[in-house]
Amino acid sequence: MRGENFNTSEGEIKVSFGYQCNSHKGIPCSTANGCAIQLGSQMPRTSSFSCLSGAALSANATLANTNICNGLIGAEILPSLDSPNSFRRVPSSPSLTRLDILSSSLQSSMSNLSCSPPSPDDSPESDSYLLKSMSAPSRSESFLNAMELQVAGGAAGEDRVQAVCSEENGWLFCAIYDGFNGRDAADFLAGTLYETIIVYFNLLDRESKHDVPRALNGLNGNGPFEYVHDDSRVGNEAKIPSRIDSKKYASAESFMKKSADHKMEVSSNSFRHGVLDSFQRALSQAENDFLYMVEQEMEDRPDLVSVGSCVLVMLLHGNDLYTLNLGDSRAVLATYNEGNDMGQCGRLRAIQLTDSHTVDNEVERTRLLHEHPDDSMPIVAGKVKGKLKVTRAFGVGYLKKKKLNDALMGILRVRNLISPPYISTEPSLNVHKISRSDHFVIVGSDGLFDFFSNEEAVKLVHSYISSNPSGDPAKFLVEQLVIKAAHSAGFSKEELMNIPAGRRRKYHDDVTVIVIILGMNYRTSKASTCV
Image (cartoon, rainbow, N blue to C red; front, side, top):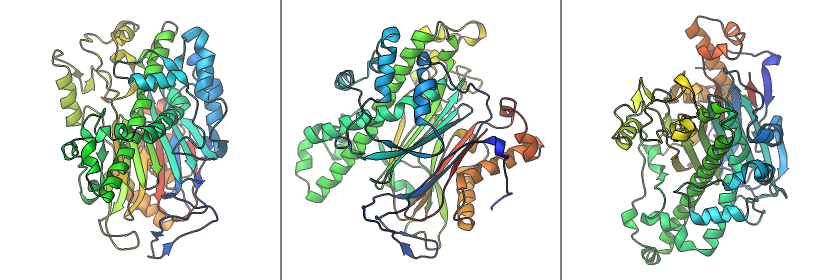
């Protein structure tokens, strides 16, 4: 099911970047003909992916650069992160990080942004750490140690896409920030979240070295959250999470009585929990910083209180694939039936690794109603307080704080904001262990899934890469979306693409897609952002 070919004009392609692991030494992966390949080099490799392909198409008209944080994010930080035409090499430990620059620049007018007033749930220890230093860890401090990184990023409408890779140490960080009501929140995330995560990874590394029992705390029920370790999902058609049984490990002392193999398993699970905990703490810090900034600037820009973003972050480290999501973006794994390697005949299945946080999700709808018993109308016309379909998101302060809602005038203000917050910032967190049956991962904003189901997207990518081993599957997905959107609207694809951004939002949303080919298959990749 390859679909129709599609070519955009040269003027529509604004950003093009991509990455391919040129050499590997790691777990060999079977190719389509059943032959195992293992490319070697002088430096050991541990990558569980061979390449990535990404594409983005805008439908919304938005400002090229926003003025949040005195214009620093749009004028200085994002240009240093974005690489419109290719991945760019950067040192892993700059002497002065972007977070330091942001804090010092805004200190006189906004206090210290990186040390904004914490929420009640914030850990005092982590706040104390952040007050001492927001600097990036050195190569020897972080478990994501690397001499240099490859970075790329770009924007399409209100979406932002970001990728950071260390082939030296075999890890990949990808993020899609699907902004709404403006791109300010997505820009803020693109400018700060990755380095904030690295700060917390640095803290995780120190804690794991000096306080192992506390690092195991999350496994005995005392941690801040439970996380999903989803190996069981691969063997099931539905998305059924398998949670760690906290009763099985009643205390740290019980760990010491287990076998050496079991201790190693517990340690690995503890480390995975720590990574996800770092994700959550970094997101909480970014949320506090952003809403603090909004409060400082809302007198001049009251629209900032309604600006928000969905968040989808993915980290592939060794054979562990971590995801964090808020909102309705998705990560979908394409995997063969259990027991079938990629070289054998077997049905390729789509497994959604993320939760959909919308009022259409019965679990989310029930949670929202339960959390607001004194509000008879938390959901109006299929939206949270009549405003948003997503139930969890970054920013969107007017649905979280009465003070921010009061900054809006007239019909924009939410009436009867009885028991805020109505939009949660509690992310869904997941870790999946990559197996030989896993083929690729599709990471996409909701604009993709407005037109394709998980299964349809997987079939399209699989069919395309089978017949075009050097092609760009993410761009192909976006092209097929344009064809489908045009057909639905009664246009040709050329007619649809000639409609200016802004007006074209009537026919499709901003769309951002990243396809990550797992294993050691050697193939060409590129990424594009089209407007």
